Image 1 (spheres, helix red, strand yellow):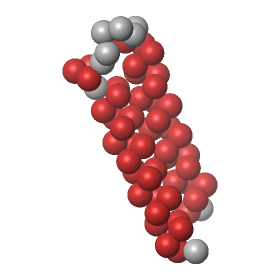
Image 2 (cartoon, helix red, strand yellow; image 1 turned 60 degrees about the horizontal axis):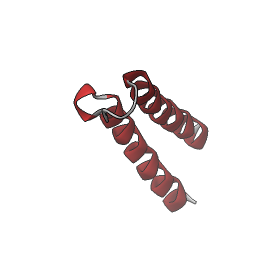
Image 3 (cartoon, helix red, strand yellow; image 1 turned 120 degrees about the vertical axis):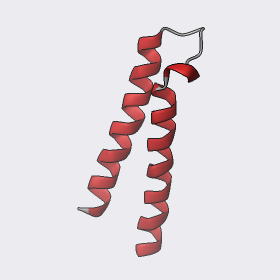
Length: 57
């Protein structure tokens, strides 16, 4: 069970990095509105932190 939790934690940490990269202004796609890019980053980071909380506590 610990291997599954560690694997899931690794994926959630990747989501945190992706969300942080998505919220970075330099990585925005000019096709979309900046608020949409920020919200996508927020959802990735918030969801990953929530997943880590539910997984370990």
